Length: 443
Image (cartoon, rainbow, N blue to C red):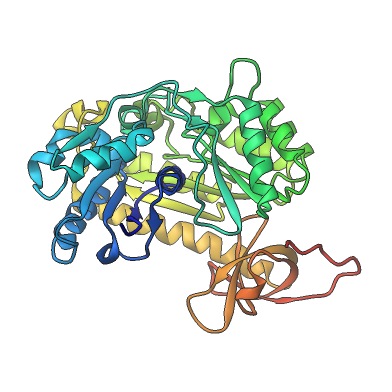
């Protein structure tokens, strides 16, 4: 009997990437081999996102497309947040789908696949508040950095957000288990770790908090870079900021979701901080960590957003001076409190579009101006992969800036000092420079 094969296609956030690595690791332990295209696979899994309607629409379209070229007896499954949200409705809407598995059901994946092979239509969407997959070794896609979940679920109940309904209540891994996994990935040759959680800096294992975790993980020998995503502004205590400043491995970058610059809108979003408190958090971070790179998330068109609310968002963007932002048009998600707001609060689509365009222009303009001023600076970069165009490699600075440098794929995983020689306004070009003390190179 030939070795069974699996293809996993991932949508959405870094937590989904990590979950795909867990699923692949679980199946690899059962004898499955990963393949690079769905046509060649005995099992095809779409690991999905439910944060916005567009994300789910893409998956529905992909399911339709896959029907044309899957093997006749291939098992087709939907996993992740969209699977958790829709559950049996996915089975009802597409006869080709035989597996629907939420984020807490991956341990049973091999058994569920076997059931699907026998013609059963399998579903696993129960929450398990004890599940951290501690005994499952991930098969990592990235040969440079490791995504390490430290927390699953979320106890914040922002009115627009589907995550608490698709990933359940917040629970944190034991600090020792996170350190052990970090030690393992460093031993495998990876030098950068990204700690993951829905509100990662609210981490607490019952005895130790996020500051303790940063210090413990940052002390692992051989770890060069430590990042985390995504934090919540409310959970940047003085202790956490102090640990970030003290631990050499912690990179000088924070992705700090703002969502809106209007206190009025933030209250209706149930974000639990005001505009002033957000700006104070930014100020405390920048005082403690000079040269901090700062990125954010912003939602445009939340129900009831007025022209004044939007102007306050623009002014907050200008005051902070973000290096970049993920910007989204409000997407109502079934079951969230925002869908129960009065219909008359809905912002007209053409106005949302206009505001989005203005926000995009403002954010990108600020970033472009900042980046042009950085040309000529020197920084350390880690080479991550081949760039899309030309004989260039894509590297990343500690501040999370993308730098394209000459080279080839043998450089992946290496650290270099570079001088920034140019910028498109968003990414940089650079040249490797010699330092008096050469940087060590990863094996």
